[in-house]
Every structure is written in structure tokens, then in C-alpha cells.
Image (cartoon, rainbow, N blue to C red):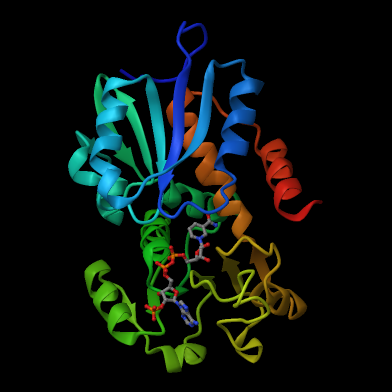
Length: 280
Ligand code: NAP
């Protein structure tokens, strides 16, 4: 059976990421680097897992020395019934991105919440209004993260208005029609859509640059490219920005802490990620 990763366990602990299809992921780089940094006998692998194999994958965790999993699309919600328990945060989001062992039980947590919230907390941003653009899977963790920090009132706009309306009602926040988002003036703006991401959305922005206001904070959770058009235009108008790599960084640090009880150095891990992503 798996357990928390410690030194001198005598048996190599396995960890990995499950999802399908599983594109390129930076998680193996970060976690394997961390294991070797602390001399831990553990290895992190990518395990592409189609939906029909999810249940047998969880059975494997229970019978082999597998200490933990990162969980990505399409398993974040589907995995919940196969676990023994989930944390309050995973319950609030309705999704699990981290599986770990505690006292012989298999738990699910959601480190995207802390991953999103931490870059705001370290900048001491804990109040003010916020508009979230997009109502997909990532937006759920973003909304819970903002609520955890006490940021509000919150507004939500999405290309498909009905989806935003539904989610806004679920979280008891305000719905803004997509076509009217530019008129919604908030201290914080968060992009959770893939607009601006490398590929067919690169060079696009979900926000009209003339609708930025001085004193705002623009946070893009897209991390490839590092500087999206949304952030570039915000910066050119003197608006403070947070890059998506920060969210990825802090969610990975949180996973590593859950699995090993150890803290990876923040700046060194950021440099590792930036080097891999942007070659800088
Ligand atoms: P998702 O579940 O597919 O949701 C995408 C959302 O974006 C939906 O609300 C969708 O609106 C909207 N959208 C898609 N195409 C659009 C377009 N052309 N115009 C306007 N809105 C559009 O995706 P997700 O899992 O939430 O991920 C979203 C982004 O966040 C991705 O780029 C992902 O890489 C990034 N992400 C980053 C991190 C991090 O650690 N930094 C973590 C998770 C995700 P409809 O409802 O109308 O389809």
C-alpha cells in the first residue's frame, strides 16, 4: 500500500499524473527534481488513463506502493466516488486534482485553490471586488480561492452566458453577461479562459485594453506563453499583473508538501519551471 514519501522506506514509492489524453506536462519535472533534491526514493511518471481504466487505476493505487496522484481532465470529478474521503476544499470545488494517503485512507484534495490564491496572498491582496472570465473547470477553483481569501463581491462572465448564470447561482456570486463584461469595473480581473494560450488563441485577449483601469490587478491563469496579450496590454497601461506560471508553481509546491511533508524552495522551483517553459 502507498504512504507518505519519506527517507529510507526501503521500497521506491511511485507517484504519477493521470488524465486523458495526457499532453505534455511539467509535473514530472518538478516532482522528480524535488525527490532528488531531498534524497527521497520516489519516482513520478505520466500515466495516460482513459475513462474506462479509471476504476482499475484506483485499485492499483490501493495494491501497489503508489504514494499519490495528480489528477487532470477528464477525471477530476469522476475519481471522487473511488476515494475514501475528500477535503473540504475538494468538496467546495467539486473536483480533485491530488490523491494522497493519510492513516491508511485514500484522500482527494484540490491544490488548484491554494495554487491560485497563494500569489494573491503573498501580495497581500485579500479584499476588493473581482471579475472572473470563463466558467470552465479552472474557474471553480479560482472562485473558491477568491472566496477563501475573503475577496468580494465576485462577478462571473462566460462566453456561454447560461453556464455563468448557473455557476454564479451555485456559488452565490453575481452573473455578468459576456457582452457586458467590459462595463464591470472591479479591482481584480482573472482570465480563466484559454484565450491568449499558445496555439489557435495566441495573440488574442478576452478583455478590451481600453477597459483596463489604473489600480486594477490582472491575473491570467494561462501560463504558456508567460506573457499573454491580456497581461501585456494590462502592463502597458500601468496595471499590476500576475502570470499563470505562479498558479502552476504554487499548486505543485502544495502537492509536493502533501506527499512528502517537505517544502520545495519557491524561487528555485520557479526558475526550473521558467527555464522549461520559456527557456529563460
Ligand atoms: P475548460 O474547462 O475547457 O473551460 C474553458 C472556458 O473558457 C469555458 O468557460 C469556455 O466557455 C471558455 N472559452 C473557451 N474558448 C473560448 C473563446 N474562444 N472565447 C471565450 N471563451 C472561451 O478549461 P479549464 O480547464 O477551465 O482551463 C482554462 C485555461 O486555464 C486553460 O488555458 C488552462 O491551461 C488554464 N489552466 C491553468 C492552470 C495553472 O495552473 N496556471 C490550471 C488550470 C488551468 P464556454 O462555456 O462558452 O465553452
